[in-house]
Amino acid sequence: MHKKLSFLLLATVLWIATATTGAVKSPARIPVVFDTDIGTDIDDTWALAQILRSPELDLKLVLTETGDAKYRAALAAKFLEAAGRTDVAVGLGVNFAMSDEHRNQLPWLKGYDLTQYPGRVHADGIQALIDLVMHSPEPVTIIAVGCTPTLAAALEREPRLAARCRFVGMHGSFYVGYGGGAPSAEANVKGYPAELRRVLSAPWQDILLTPLDTCDQVSLRGADYHAIWSATADPMLRALIENYCLFAPRVSWMHCDFFATRSTTLFDCVAVWLAHAEDLVEIETLRFRITDEGFTRPEAQGPLQARVALRWKDRPAFETFLAHRLLGQP
Image (cartoon, rainbow, N blue to C red):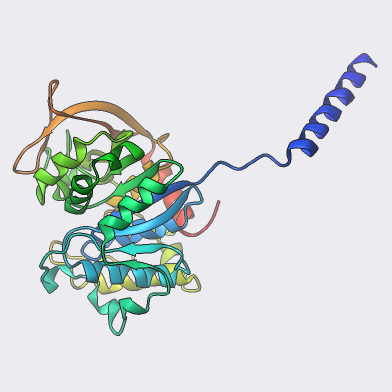
């Protein structure tokens, strides 16, 4: 009887507490900026879709890096429209000359007018980033999946930016390179090494990187990929696969004749996941330097320091998670 009364008393206390304080609050979503060179490799588009399907992340701004800023911004804007997410702003970063050889998703933009995007388009994306971060009541996470001249320019304009942000990047190659070989001059480092040095030297709240050691191993295939390929009733996934089909015959650095059966390497999707989870990788804090040739060399007294996802604990689990997340499944 005594135990029964104690149980009833505890239940009553819990009921009163719930009635008084309201329902338990769900975890706050993480405000993020997606800093991207979307439109050259297709994995940026997969990563953008992943962000939009991640309930943990609150996408505030897509900011372009390198190449033709208007081309990249238009691609992001049209994809956001297809996903029904015109609440997300698009910002034009530093502009560079760009040949059609690198505009691998250009046909998808035929007839699209960026000025008609229902959401906000910031011609000065750098200032839009600064304003967002400096007025945010909580830290902003920057997910950077390309070279970083736009971020470097933002830090030069507003040095206080980094202290209010986390940085999660797809950069480097520490012990493993492309295809599982020796360390490589990874593309996001090799393109603008001085700018990346400047960015990684800034006083971010946290720096977390996925280098080729982990992100070069990820792709979707089999039933997981087929489910996405077949999801034609989903406007966002239909737009994703349309882009992939247009990308495949245009890409110059691979023979992409497998697009109907599997994805390309989804480097950038690992960075998106690391913005809210870390449980499937082994992370170490490393000191290193960036060479002028674009190598990230571990050194005990190196000038740069970051937390680095060096190995997978369970890569297949991540790939299954990624497929389910894109499909909007639990």
